[in-house]
Image (cartoon, rainbow, N blue to C red; front, side, top):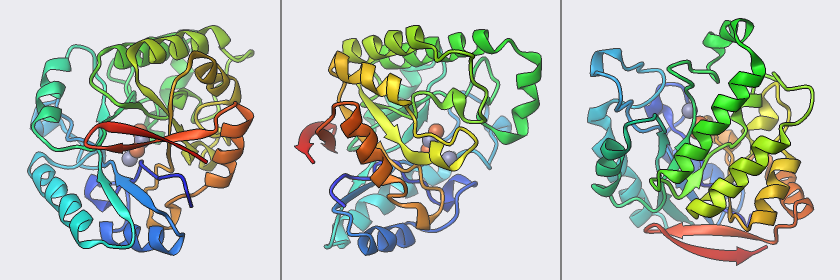
Length: 268
Ligand code: ZN
Ligand code: FE
Ligand code: FE
Ligand code: ZN
């Protein structure tokens, strides 16, 4: 597999299974040249007793996570292992995030929107909330946060950019205006957009982002990064054939590699 898988979780985050070594084996078996771990950053914006151990690793695990990824990278010969992290973007916490990020030698930092005003809209346990909401407003709010996350300058990559479609709650017409607004914001901020295959495995039944959204990113000149969002070792590189097809359809012929937060664009 030529394209890297930069979005991988492990059992450390409380809702994925498998240890890092199992993910590495799977990647090796699939012929990956490069992968990166991107476990969820501890829920920094909440007091420690309010943090859900099923959503992200504990504060005390964080230095261990970093050390383990770096060690694994040093001792693994057959493929390159990068140190990433998936960070929830929460309005008003930029300074805290910036401080955490700059204290560790990440190869890349992924920014994600998983919360709208405290509502974990992608959590299956919070599904009922959709019944009490105006979907147009939800989409609007989601995309505003997405643009804000890009503009924060904290992240190299914006994850699963239309995650709001996860459970199949869709607007009557695809929100092209919101897609364009986001693509423009990504370009302006200089962030990469993630092509994330996890969407294939949920009700959305479609890679994040949609074809129309990715096409707009291409038009705006936004670089892409690829990720499976594996929460199980067997899912490393899952759906990457579809991802390559989608990328080509949208006009992409290259993906971005990261090392020490520096980019390299590689043709496929
Ligand atoms: Zn996760
Ligand atoms: Fe995520
Ligand atoms: Fe993830
Ligand atoms: Zn994710």
